[in-house]
Length: 369
Image (cartoon, rainbow, N blue to C red; front, side, top):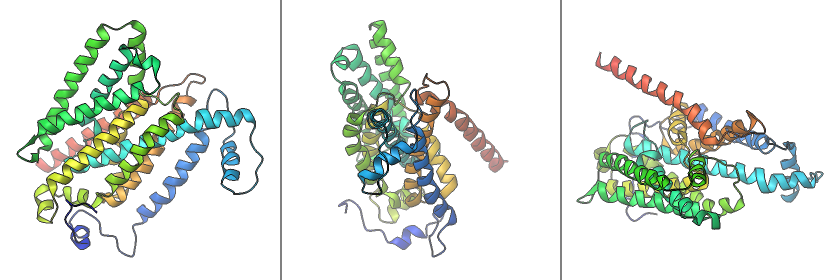
């Protein structure tokens, strides 16, 4: 399928130490995960579309969708409920699923490439680049004239960051993962400084609008947001999932992967490029939302194992479920007020990150002791 991808025998990948081999006794945890996750996600969607300033029965969505699919003839919900569901709640939930699954899949790829459970899409500096694009749209007044101004300039800023990092980290045909991290940190500082400088000369309402955007939120998401993001996010996630076997090889190190017939540099660049595009578009949809790309891949690696053929789809479902639940929690805690989803993910993700750091330190102490 890919001209740069050498043929790798199935047995070569499946018998690698640390990557489980799937035989007739398919892992019960995998079966349980792929049975429960879709059910939990469906239940979360039904509850999420019903919670808000105006309560709507969770069964209203079922009664609305099933007849359109030719299944049964249930009574149609009230016109008010249909309007709320189709124009407000359902696009918001779909956006949460798209963004959550996209960030989780990109997190899996980053952790697989860097062989580090602390890696996440944020290390590419895309959030800072996207924030610079957003503040340019807001401070120049472009955002006031077009719904797509902030998303377009956010994507442009994220892509500018990705291109700069690619140029800075490449030398003599090779891409250093260490230099990617260093370049990402440097560019994040640069873009954050430029963002602060623009805000310094902005009007008060523009500063408030930008700060509100940086909190990350799904309020006001419409089908237009889905229309411009889904054609990028869905194929991007599918494309990343096609490299599951290569990611399995990366976990053993680049030299081992190369010895098994993989074009390491080319695949590394392709994976980073796709992850950059997907992350940039996800940020454009709802602003920077942290910890999804860090927490979900690490959690599901513990639950379903390190095999990326299982981990990638499980993390996609888990990321969608996590962000839908976080958005639901933000709406349910202090009605009719809403806590933005980026705040909820930060509150939930920070303790997990701290516990992860402590656990890694203790493990290293035991090994060295």
